[in-house]
Image 1: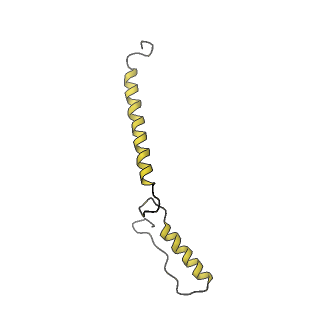
Image 2: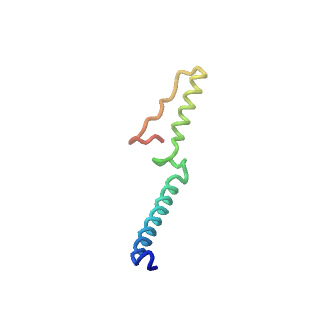
Image 3: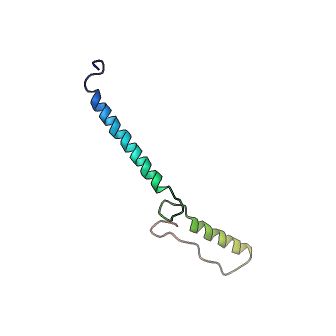
Amino acid sequence: MEKHGEHIIWFTILFSVLLGWVFLVLEQIGESTENPFEGSANDIPITQISRMIEIDLREMLGETDLPEPLTPVNNILL
């Protein structure tokens, strides 16, 4: 212990806190991306993708009464 000095314990505590914080942040990121189809801000815009496919298919069939594309609400596209 003398080789590193008595201050090594403070680096151990700092490293442990930093490592714990990293794991907590990874857990939060995992929870927010766990189910990508729930309709929250970080999810896949499946409704918009489906609407665009519907519009494209109806255009290919020659229909003129097409639904409007979805627009973002509060800068979030669902």
